[in-house]
Image (cartoon, rainbow, N blue to C red; front, side, top):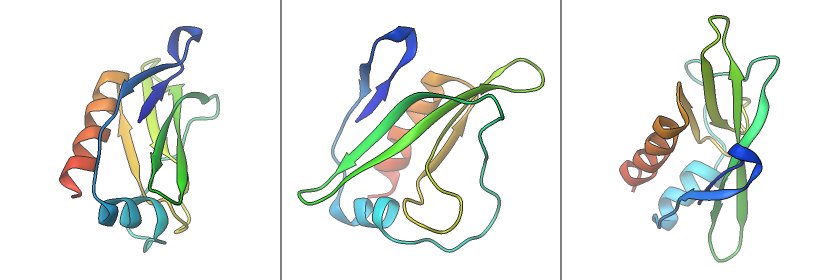
Length: 110
């Protein structure tokens, strides 16, 4: 479930079901550090949250929003960048694209 906090009101903007294997791999297992992970800008604010759960565990992954040097918005759904779970990470230039990428990432990860 993706909850947006835009417009001062929480709204569920996407929800769905994915496999237990996907949940385990993306949200519970430690991950190997490779490549570069994004980092929220200095003035980042919490814009929403991704909630994922199985029958035993609830995981929250913050969605950050900030303005880049060119003034354009940036969005990041990521909790950690140090190898600890969750490994899930999506970066985008718009909220709608972020939601689409989150949905696609969870579908493709089945």
